[in-house]
Image 1 (cartoon, rainbow, N blue to C red):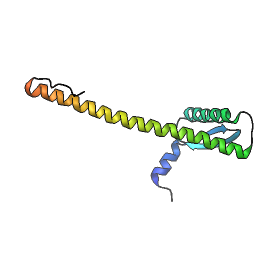
Image 2: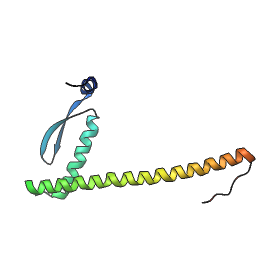
Image 3: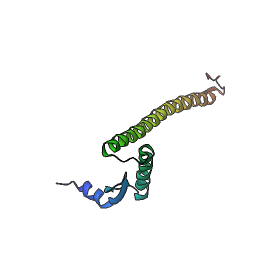
Image 4: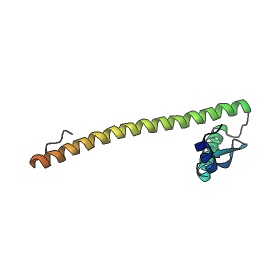
Length: 114
């Protein structure tokens, strides 16, 4: 039996028609249809660039896998970079807070360790 929150979510879901690699299909999503269509268009363009007009079912699956792996690599690299940036931001914020505390406590600025 569907949960109440599933029923509520279903009310906000819309069908979005997509065409990727010559295959048209419909998905249900609560996301912005134009955004989802733009993602599908980008995926289709990346796929088409690898395909270079030579359709073959076995080859198409390999190419789509290559596109997906490339996109996943971008996602993972971005996440790793964000984590490094987050750690650096935390370190800098801590150093600034230490300087502010020093000023408030005794009116002196501590030399930076950078």
